[in-house]
Amino acid sequence: MECPVSKLIKAIAPVSRKQRELAQREELILDSAQNILHEQGYSYLTMDRVAEAVEYSKGTIYNHFSSKEDMVCSLCCRSINNLINMFTRAAEYKGTSRERFSAIGIGYSLYHQAHPMTAQNVQIIKINAVREKISDAKLAEMESLEQRIIEIALDVVKEAISCGDLPKETSPIANGIVFGVWSMYFGALILEHSDIPLQDLGFSPTVQLLWLNTQKFLDGYNWLPLSSDTDNEAMFNKISSDLYANEIEIINKRKKQS
Amino acid sequence: MECPVSKLIKAIAPVSRKQRELAQREELILDSAQNILHEQGYSYLTMDRVAEAVEYSKGTIYNHFSSKEDMVCSLCCRSINNLINMFTRAAEYKGTSRERFSAIGIGYSLYHQAHPMTAQNVQIIKINAVREKISDAKLAEMESLEQRIIEIALDVVKEAISCGDLPKETSPIANGIVFGVWSMYFGALILEHSDIPLQDLGFSPTVQLLWLNTQKFLDGYNWLPLSSDTDNEAMFNKISSDLYANEIEIINKRKKQS
DNA sequence: CGATAATATGACGAAGCGTCAAAAAATGTC
DNA sequence: GACATTTTTTGACGCTTCGTCATATTATCG
Image (cartoon, rainbow over all chains, first blue to last red; front, side):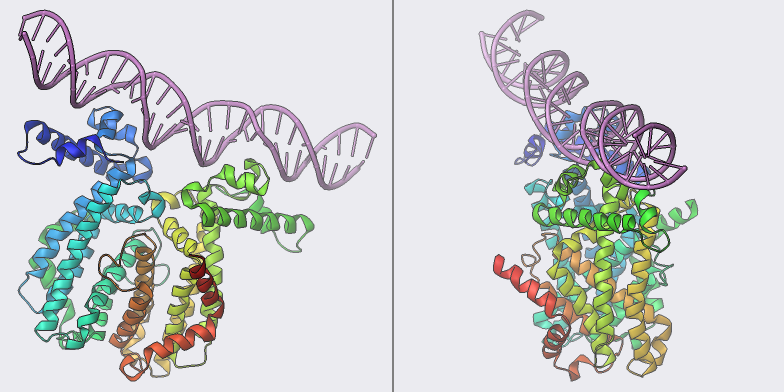
């Protein structure tokens, strides 16, 4: 089901005052929803509460989002957009192709550490019973964003192949590398944020394990320079501070609070 | 919240007629739930419908499960138990340590391909908003099963280290390997079963990518014999038919139907 | 067989979703 | 500026589902 408002907002330029106001209100609603999620968790997020928080009626909220799930999906789109920015910077980082690819992984880790809610949203949005309730338009929007973000990572892989850091034969399975780290990071993300006591199960902190495993994985693909020829911890720290000072700061603040 | 019935069922031996009947009814309920999930999907699964299907009242269902989520968690426990059996067989497979470990991965893939519903359940159960509604007892039960299944994989890694197939230095990061494949398979599983058009995003079939990536990952850890010295496709086929004829059959039946 | 304990039942209250007729506001017309 | 028309907003309402609990039914035991 398409929403009345989204048609208006996305109508062709020029952007009228009304369109701007609507877009602004949409952001306000999303901010409120995000806030509720952050403060009280997903079970507490209801349309009535969002309506109360933004001081509009429920009907108005439904003019922007065809369902609660649609709203959460929009939040996910915002997050993916943020990630796209981070990934873009990572892909342009000065360093070896392997460093740039690793930087993307680090960005993913740090972003979700800085914004744990995002991980939950993404997780929820992937459930089919939830997806059913999202408008086709919004799903398409999200898919196209995912498309873009994958492209960024894939480009780095292709560069690596063309400059010889990866064997030429890797070419037809370039997407295998991207899918590999994507699934690995995504899986780890969910396992980590699921309150599952990984430590109790005998695992080290997730970020460290992820980093280690990424390096082993890339070694397996023979992505030069191999991790045995590199100071991996130093590399991690350098990339983090070079590219993701913001996220690091947020994470540290969060730590202090708890 | 603990359920009246589960206390009874788990009471100390000897198993009385009543206990047997209760346990039997619990299985009946779970079978029904599974059936509804299979036929109609998660959104269609309601306590009223389950009650109607098993021809007991809703109150009686609630004597077995403290909530709908508790019920789904029980379904997950059944699945994990199945996986434990498969993993155990895989770990005892005649072959190199690397083959045995790979066999575990294949088992995971095939099981979820044969029982797609399971993947959904697991996915749902990992959401915190859902977990909140599961009784502590059941969560503990699931955790202990997960503990066991991890242990099986970890033992294979340890054997590999002690027989020299993996470098001695791997010892302190043995759990890294297990976590790596766990997260990779779990992530891929969810991405695959999420109706997300991976093909549209330019990816090959998941099982193939997973198999390839597993081999690269193990190569990265230097788990001998390396994939470059092995016919990987043949290995996959051999392990599948040696260990998982059942699952293959189910998968093929499923294919025919569609 | 009657008393007591255990179990099963389904009507009920609460919560949340999404709708839609009516009210309010904005826009257009003279 | 006053009236008509269109657009937007509102919140009461219907519906679904959850989980509970007083009551009814069944089982157990003296």
